Every structure is written in C-alpha cells, then in structure tokens.
Length: 171
Image 1 (cartoon, rainbow, N blue to C red):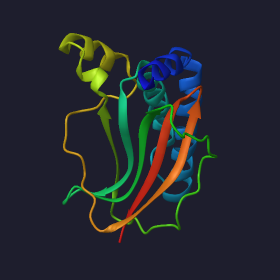
Image 2: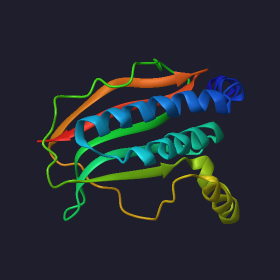
Image 3: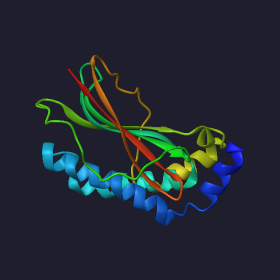
C-alpha cells in the first residue's frame, strides 16, 4: 500500500512542483544571507535548482547548508533538508530561524547526500545526472555535530513530495 502511494504521489510531482520546493529552500538561504552574509547571493539560485532537479528525479536524500569550523569539520549552525514522500508533510513559510548565532570565523559550507535510487544507477548514469546540476560538488566527509540543539517540524511540500527541515545549532 505504501509503495503504490509513493508511486502515485511522485508520478504527479512535476519539475514545477520541485521548483516550488527548491524556491522555498532558496528563500531560507536568502534569509540566511541577510542574517549572516552567506551564502553568496549568486549561488542561491543554483542551490535551489539543484534541490529541484534532484527532488524531481528522486535522487535527493539530504542537503545541508550552514557554517562549520574547518579545522574540526564540525557544524556550528546547519539547515538540513531531507527529501520526503507522502506522510505528514506540511508546507511551512520560509524562515523561523532560532535566535542569531555568533558565526565569526566560521565558513559557509554545503553537503549533499544522494538517495538510494541514485546509487542504484550505473556510474555513467550518475555522472550524466551530476553534469546536469548547477552545483559542482566534490567527494568529502560530512561535518559532525557536537553538543547542541536541533529544531524540527518545518517543511516544504507540493503534490505529496517535499523536504523536511531541521536546524542544528552547536552550544
């Protein structure tokens, strides 16, 4: 039953729907820029389109945007978006960030993980998909989270597919 629901929900999920969700992620990133000066305004549309393309094709698992300590590879503040189909998704308004955080000395960073559907493709198919994306990513290690707080319950959805968002802030 769940499998058929997922297929019917994703069958009606178009690139226009995916761009709506990606646009909401982009709005969060613009608010992040307004608060902290990063990410660069010129890169936000690329990040939003990357989310839209991967979400539409079912290849997005999670994508993180935030600020990390480069010497320890640990997040100071992170927005994580997790691709979700069906379930209890709600379409929230962008924003609702926690109180401002002192991010002096922390660099902006983004880390993306692909879904199992992506990893089930051949290596050449994966390469073709990556070539279509507006963001060029390299292989790396995900930044860690140490002691901190995580706020959940925010998400963006259209036609049964979307992303849930959590915000992590280190103590």
